[in-house]
Amino acid sequence: MHPLWSLTKSAGQEWKSSTHGQDRQLKAVTELIRPYFLPGAAQSNKYNLSAGLSFTQNGIDIALNQGTPASVHVLDTVLKNNGGVGVRAANAVAPNVQVGIDHTRAILDNVGFDANTNSRMVINNSVAENATSDGMKADASTGQLTVANSDSSFNGNGITASAGGSVNVVFSNVAYNTTCAFNNSASSFATFGNNRIIGTANCGTITPASQQ
Image (tube, rainbow, N blue to C red; front, side, top):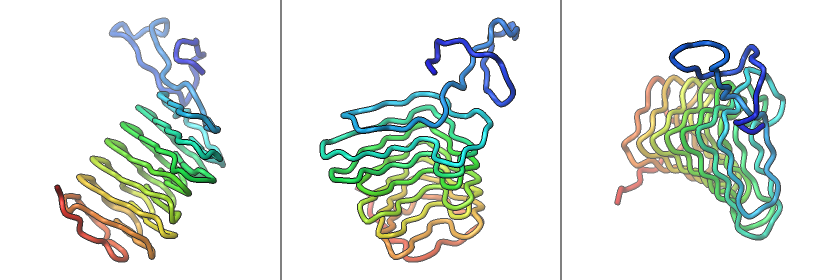
């Protein structure tokens, strides 16, 4: 739904109001639920996806099958209560789809953010919290994830590299996760040594990376 379209106020939606605080001056910021991105050169999403509802699938499912470059940008978005992944990216064929995520929150999902087959995901200034499994992860041999200035807390694992995936983390906070903070399962996991790990130990081999 486009932000300029009117919405009926209901429970679970988020609203912004003027200083007068009357309903006639309220503007809904909850606009769109669970879009699917199909093949295309470049697609962009800038909506708040939180409606306080539960879904069994993914919040934003970037599922491509194209041999030409593609990019997706997720900005200023809230994804909540998804039984699958908040944002999942995959392309069935090369090249890698490029996914930029900024000022976005994935809350109470099974997995917050997932860089899967043939994807490069860069997460900045974003939050993954209360994920049942992993807050952020790369879980394919061609899945690459870079996390900067972000928070992954209160999840099963904070940030995970598995199935040959590649993860790099810089200037981020990982706190109070149940099993692992940084979690490397037979994959590639590098940290630049300036992250904050609180409450849970790392798992697997975490490789220090030099800053340039």
